[in-house]
Image (tube, rainbow, N blue to C red; front, side):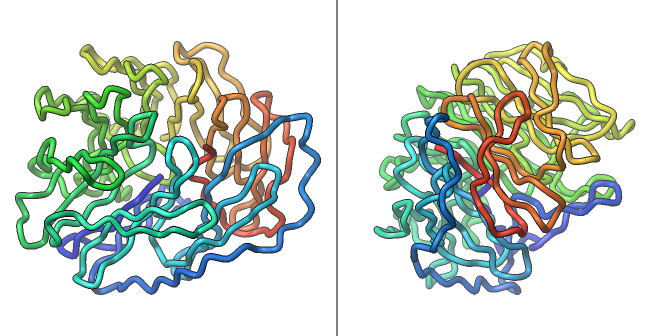
Length: 384
């Protein structure tokens, strides 16, 4: 999901409508007319007793947001057993929280005094906040879900500069912004970029470029891969198919970084599919054909499984990358979903919309551990 503010020149907070169901985009991008009213008060919340989970050996940290725009959303970290909950900061319409690959650092963003948006890091308990200001202070930088090498040494960003429109594009840098350089510009006819993957060697970037609205869906566009040298820019979705940021990870890389999975919708039929494409060439192959348009396609961090969904009734699915062994993730209505680091579990927002809690589920669809005990609106970003 997703670290994203739009530059002032672009329209701001948008609500994505899918049929009769409206969801907030994972990339809410306020404009200058909608100032960010952020408060950063790290604190440890009193959590309910942890659920029994010792036999599951659940480790790591989960990052999520509790709340819903236009109210300030709480950006939170928590352990999978429900302990050690930290309310990091509250902000309206940001959807700007994720964890570094090793789970030791929170990656987010801050609006600076001079009106730019700066990449920001802190510890999972909210301490040690660092605002990473680029050498050119008029440059804004935001990243996207899974948009780093697996070791976290290199991150893909979208950068823009209101004083230099031609500076917009995909950038690469270390977390402290050392070695910052632009890879490629914003493609003609597009207005925003979200990075969705960076191969382990830093040689290729997977990114979404937003073009505009299609049939009531706002954040629609195309999915690209480009070499870190800026060469070999290639669109992965076929003509007549569009990708859209409508509440989930629309694309992700395979663990070996050689393939990408993504969800796309046919503009004519309004039916979707889950695709797998090799980054080094060839057409994307549909592995699951759908009667609806899915909002997410997330490759497990280990193995060949892909999570996708939701269907109109809120059901998510798991399928092998070759399209075999498709099965329900859970029978209950689910919101957003994120894989565990070992690919053996998922954290899900479970329950009716607006009255959900976070749960750990197994790959058979069984609910194992209740993580939170405060029903509301939840968006899950990472489990590292």
